[in-house]
Length: 117
Image (cartoon, rainbow, N blue to C red; front, side, top):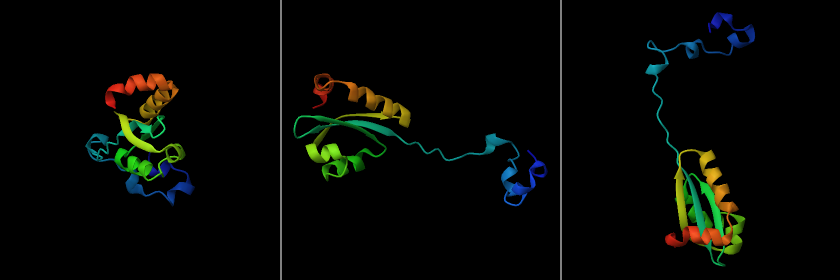
């Protein structure tokens, strides 16, 4: 797309350098890879219930739960310890797994995480 072919209202605000490509095309552009992990975790609460959540910073999230500020549920039920965690590359994968775990009954969750406790 040439700068000259843009409508007049865009010509004033668009920097022409933004339209220029490097000599070798887009293959020469190297953007820093910012890998972000998404964690699904299950907490055991003081009353024997489980809390399942996802986050990008597991350590920070656990600290918040222990302070009573992580979630309303863990504030009321008391987060004791992390009994399970999984790592995912995308948020959608983590949310999908979180939903799968939340749909399990208490007994199914207990069986699934028995080896982790």
